[in-house]
Structures are given as structure tokens and as C-alpha cells.
Image (tube, rainbow, N blue to C red; front, side, top):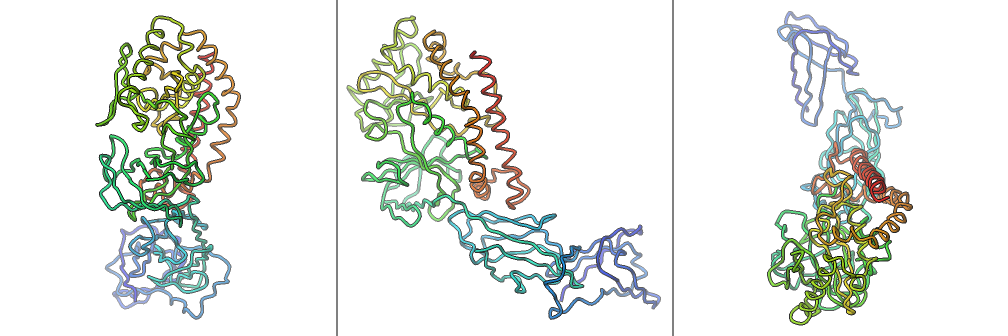
Length: 531
């Protein structure tokens, strides 16, 4: 039996919307008084107790009772839907402690809603799950069966949830589970995963496909336990992952900090559309599970390597703000920019390093003396690389992970692009202003009439397709929403009211709308400056 807790408020005019037909009180003078239900200001019911607040003098009341509760045998679930305060659902929860397959708690707000929808990652299955209902109701029925605390329910299809009030009034809800469409990539590491050393003899699979053993490590100077980190994968032999070209080396890009989870993929798509860049990494969207811990949505990306199917020959070099231990590097004589050799298998040491250094220094001599350097660089690659970075205005544009390829014929070509995860108006950055000042090379190149002519022509082509890129963002919205919902479950990236998909959609739509607006303003500002 539920405990009844009576809370007496200061004497005031009662204003409750309680549907309880009557409340009976026995007064201290022995008189029985039958009050209308609106004498009760509020009543909150849980499985353990009724908590009642009344505007009535406490000193005058001896006992307190409700109208009789409807018997379970008399409940009619086919009654017309009638919402009242004693068949109110406040929230539905699926807790990890009750549902071991879930990677995190899910709490769906139900106030002022009838159709509830939640998203779970591909790692979990809620075909059979234990919910918790925060509700005021005499009975709860799920799919026509009376539900009790701890009961499992079938969520492989839309669940029909009915709350029955004390007097038999029925209010209905629907509850639907949607699963992320991303394939599940699973890694089990035998050693601690760090950014300093490879965790060897790790295992990996995608979906149910066992990919065998590989080496696994964190990536980046900001790697730290407990964060959504980037990772690198190294197989002993070449493998094709999700229909991408066979290779030993791959990367997992975390999309950390991007509530839209679109920015990096948009950058790769944009770069792929420009013919001036010889190669752009392919990617696939995945859900990532590391040692049984769900890490959220990631991009599985082809790591930049000099090999068939990726950078076809030459040397892969990157302009950086720092270098890692063991990497070969040099500082350019005039610009003093740091160049790091990024593909040791191509023979960075010795002749390779010297050749790249000589090519860079020879180019800079001509660049800074107004000489003819046209034969030394792939001008179209410089133009395309420049425009991609300017349009997207990535926070690291030109300053770090600025990649170039010194080809076998000695020509310097820019690219491929890096993961531009913090772009497209990330963190409120203005759509106005150039970022080329971060690059001594592009400051000089923008003074060149030949570079300027090519750049204006290419920008006009890009601007003409502005609508296509805005449409692409809209096209990805539904898929992105599901990913953002699961990412929020782990990393709280969306500022949503609850885990109900409608709440998350409101927050996600605002984020994506802001990104689209920023891109439109950015292109318009650049058009006014370039033309």
C-alpha cells in the first residue's frame, strides 16, 4: 500500500486541476466533510507514496481519504483518451544498471508529449529492456499488459504505453527506439592505449567481420585518458575496410567538439570535389567500441601515406607547430616554418630529407624575390588548398597539419586536406576575415597576379555551387541527428532538454542552421572581397 503524505499549505483559494472527484476528511470535531477534488492543490504519485498539498487548516482535520481506486479487473484500456493529473507520465528512463547492453543512461522527457522516441547506438539492443517510468498513475500498461517495476518490455517495435488514473481514465503514449545506422567498429587492446607506443596484438572487427590482430595507438599531443581521442590503426598486411582501398594504415577521427558531427566529412567531400588536389582521404562513418566502452560516432579515415591508391609517389611533408620524438624535420631558411616528414617508409632520412629541404628552400628563394616559381609548384593545387582552408576557416588552417607532397618530379603540390573538425563557424568564429596571414607562403602568393587570376576563377566555380553544399547539409540532417543523439549520450555535446529525439532535434536543428547560415555569410563575404 502506498504511503500518503499530506502537506498543508497556508489558507488560500484552491486552484487545483485535480480530476479526483471527491476528497473525504473527518474533522477534529467529529464532523465528516466531503470536499470537491479541486480542494487539493497538487498530488504527486509514485510507486511508494501519494504526496498531497492542500489549502486547508491542518488543525481541523482528523482523517483523510480518497474516492476508491478502480479495481484492476474493471480497467478498460479501450476507453477514449482522457488526460488528467493522475495518469501523467513525466519521463521514461532506461538505465545502464538495469540494461547491461546500454553504454549510458537514457532519460526521455514526456511532459506535454504523446509520442516518445529515443536513439541508441548500434552497439546496443533494446529488443528486451527494463524501463523506469516516472509517473502519476494507478496502473501502467505496456502493449496491453500490466507493467510492474522491473518488468522487461519489447521495444523491437513501437510500444503502446497506457496510464490509468484512479477512476479509470486512460491516457496513451507511444514509445519508439531508433538505432544508429553506423556500422560498429570494435577494438580490443591487450595493452594500455597511449599516444606514445603501439598497443600490439590488439584485435578489431567491423560488425561481425573479424579483421584479426593489429596495432593500435592514440594520436595527437592532446591525447589523454577519459577524452574522445583520435586513434591510429596499423595492420601487418593490407586490408580493405568498408570497401575502401586496401592498406595497412588507418585513422579513427573523433569529431570531438563538433555538435553537428558534419564538419570533418564536409571538408573531405568539398576537397574531393576539387580536381586540383591529387588525392583526398576516403572515410566512412562508424560507431566505435573500445574495450567494451562505447566511444561514440567516429570517422574511419584512410591515413595519409605515400603508396598506390593514396599519395602516388614522392614525399609526404607537413607544416606543423611542433614535431614528435623520432620524426625528421627541418626549418625553412626564409619563412622559418617547421616542415615534418610524415611517412618514414619513404626514406625520410638522408637523401629524401635533403631533397625535400632543397626543394622547399629553392621555392622560397623565388617566392620572396618575385622570381618565376611556376615550374616548381602545382599552382592549381595551391589555389584549391588555399580556398578550402579560407572558406572553412578551420581554427588550425595553415598553422598545423598543413600537408604537401613533394612529387617524384620535384614539383611541390599542396594537399591532402587534414581533418577540419573545427571549421564552419566553430565556437562562434566570425564569417569575416582571411586566415592566410597564418601562412607566409599564401601571404606572398596572394600578391601574385597569376595566383590571383586562378583563385578568382576557382572561387567563382565554387560559389556557383553554393546551393549544392547547403543542400548537402540538409541531406545529412536526419543521419546526423541520430549520430548526435548517441554522441550526446556519452559526451553531452547537444544542449537538449532530455534524451527524447524531439528535444535533441530542436538542439541539433539550431546547430545545423547556425552552420548553414555561417557558410552562406562566409561565401558572400569572400565574394565581396575577391571580386
